[in-house]
Image 1 (cartoon, rainbow, N blue to C red):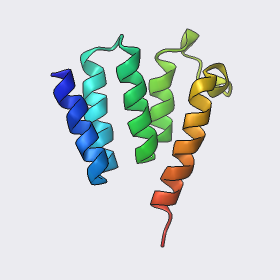
Image 2 (image 1 turned 45 degrees about the horizontal axis):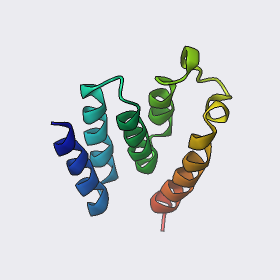
Image 3 (image 1 turned 90 degrees about the vertical axis):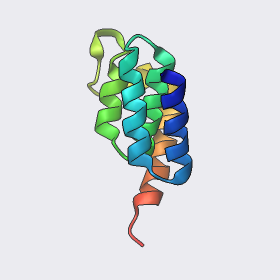
Image 4 (image 1 turned 60 degrees about the vertical axis):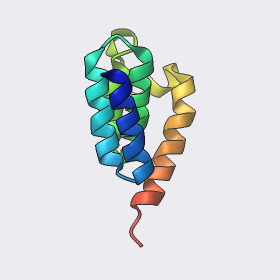
Amino acid sequence: MRPYLLAKASFFKHAGDLSSASACADEMRKLDLADRYLNSICTKRMLQAGAHEEAERTIALFTRDGDQAGGLLGTMGFVENKHSTDVESSDRVCAPV
């Protein structure tokens, strides 16, 4: 079931339906809550869809003590750069024309 949902989320992403891709990735993540790979894919889709608060809550599932206050992205440095890139790209996509 997970490969199907992963492919489905990818199809939605390439079709430009980022909110459906995010929802599908979240459904996939919930099938195996201990899988860091699925969590990171889900978080990436959430950031691309502009659901920044939900993405931070999802990232916090794999941090020590569920740290969400301030230093979350600093403690996970590899996510910090990707987060800022996705935030910038989501702002460009969602910006009024």
